[in-house]
Image (cartoon, rainbow, N blue to C red; front, side, top):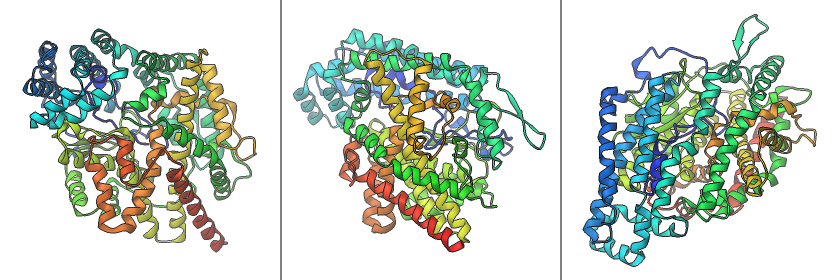
Length: 634
């Protein structure tokens, strides 16, 4: 359903190379959910990219102009340690190119997202990746040189020149990373090969979106549906159980034919991460990933442990799902249908109105910024042929956020809408309160902003429900969000941990092996052995569809974020202005504080069981509410 594309904190060489290495990945707090294609009839529903470049020719001219700056960046080598003014001049020059690259990259990635079939868009994305690699090589000397200058001298420069204040966080971060920074030549080489090392995800996306010859199935009404990702998404929550089973059986049978290919692609991506972690003297790939933002590994391990302890709550939810759907038993193809249906459409204008209404507890500044944003052509709203599934937000500093949607007039679409604008307002608040150099926020806090909005929306809808049936519907939707965001994403995180750990132990990874690992997790999480839900082994090919696995150790942040979001939403709704400002200060901070410490300072320590246990309590309380309503109806 949702994902977010973010500006990377591009101070080191490898990070610069990664600016163009990833188009925004479709994934979700639950799942990327494709939609039936629909025309973008109203220009107001299509984003205006001329705020970035008037024409494609202008984009190409800027690409060439940035390329001409690359030798100048390389020539700055050796100047940082002369004096504070020289350090500031060099860092300002690098920062200026980074900002220009951000604009170049977002223009390319947004076009690719709206039509993956467009070969020109594919070429622009490839050109951005290559230019990012060239810049990375050109500034590969940067972190090693800062580290060689030393902590004391760097601090004296920061004190001597106020212009270095905006670079202070990154300078200190470079010093922190000294044990894991390689020689200048090695850093340059790694930056140069970055696009090749991390391109498996793009190949997987092209394979599944463009190249696989997906089968068609005939529905009971005689209509035929092509069972690609769009068709599967439409049918997997069909009210007819036989249709759902047919969709699952056909779709995953087709995917299973590509197990070897997708196994090779994902294995290559895992291998790249493991190799990089070893090169940089980390104990593990997960440790290397978390260390980039100074996040303790205990956060990841505690999350997985607490989710496993709470599996009885997940199993309770699944039994409630069986009761609400009035099923004799429960299979994996029963996981997606809406728990309760209501006869109500939610158009894009209503999504705007509900988001504005539900976020009122966030105060007048937030509300005005959101209202102003929704007046602009900042969104690509409806599905279209060639458009990728899912949703995301991306942005350019000094311009505005761009929100990518596949709106379908459902309440799910409203939830996605408010989620993505949570990211959008996070970006707006960070950009308003931080310079470019510290406006970028970590993924670790990004999903907090979006999920707080979802929590506020859920509470608003329950409070304003017109009937008991609507109350159950909105409570059920919240339950599905909690299930999908906490348990499902933690299951994904455990899969990533298991596959990386296996490779680090020297075990061979293959598509078959990944299917076995994933199948064991599916069965454990969904209570197959306890008779809660039957997992058909054919459906264990599902790991092949999770595009976020090509961005390792990303999805766990959905689960940690919903735990933090539950805390902040509760505080905002009950705690008044002080609690609201405590939360908004998290958004205003951008990337000026390490994300784990930022949340801890504001009341949430995600390295402890407390926030996860509080989230599980909220889930149990929600089920209590539903069961009381059901018993009253009886």
